Length: 206
Image (cartoon, rainbow, N blue to C red; front, side, top):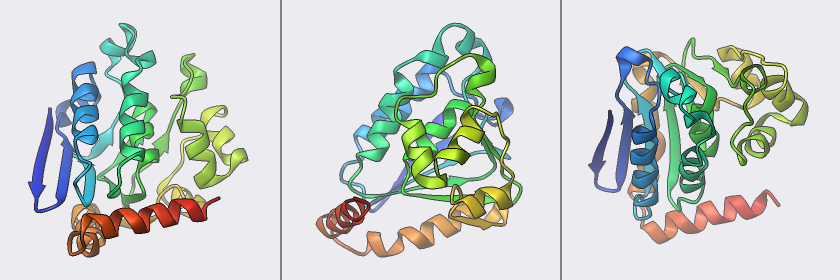
């Protein structure tokens, strides 16, 4: 349900459960975390999904069995955030619930036209993953983060782009090619060059 393609420094990771809106199981989360933890030499990593939805979040049955509060979510987002290479979320469609964590941890978010974002933890009675509120607030500001996490706001495509949650919006069939284009310069550079520039960007935030 998770596929990985490696192309000379570019790792493309696809959530491949389109019949279930790419809802995530514990096994899928573990696979994703292991891939991210092993991608330290990748100059660019792209996360995308099969079908029309990026991910509906936790699989409903798995969530009822405790997946919603599993540490695997934070393990995954932490591994993505720690990557020395460029990480890109190529959102082929809507991202919801716990799947927001891996998306927020990426360096860049490219979204298909019509993609939405929502994270209804207040309504569902769960806490967000520990690192998500700060990452979300860094992108959209504290008030808008509260609108999403506490007010249950469903953010439409244009609004998500205006807020800085989505960095670029393109037609659905161009999401992956746009991500590839953005990764091209990193793939032509050495891993050390990529790592150094990313570290400089991170230090500039402080």
